[in-house]
Length: 211
Image 1 (cartoon, helix red, strand yellow):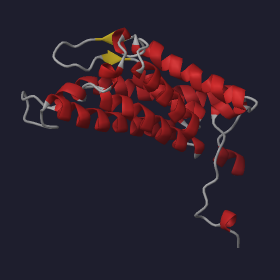
Image 2: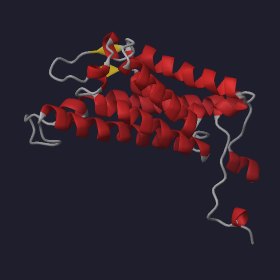
Image 3: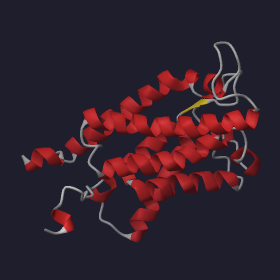
């Protein structure tokens, strides 16, 4: 029995980006395109006043990048986004950019974007973007990663605990709780869009093909 035939092997599924004829040029266009999409989504920004973390459209773009491109290209797109903002392009929320912004109180979220895109992309490569019932949990997992890294760095940067009693300053109060409803909605929307895109392209979920 070969390794490929054992239950331990995991076959990589195609992602939506793999429906496009593959080439290095195509990959580069997709990576740059999703980096620019994240930059555009960052400009949809609602400051909350009591926290340095605004409500933005970035997380939605991050989830789409991972789910559409897969792990490597998804991470590359978000890494490029973070790098372009860090060198001074106005790609972060409210047109911010530069090294100070890249390493400031919201830096954990930026790192979280890269890792979340990779994890969501890996799940998409396992076929979890094909059904709403598996796509939404995959995107919620990406959101949890962004929250975890973002809140951890926010606590360090502001000198506050990660959690605290109600009404007390904490990273969860400033960087997680105000955004849960909106981010769950974004994950749900992404979790509907990608399976719908697969249906529109006429590709059935793998388990249905195998049945």
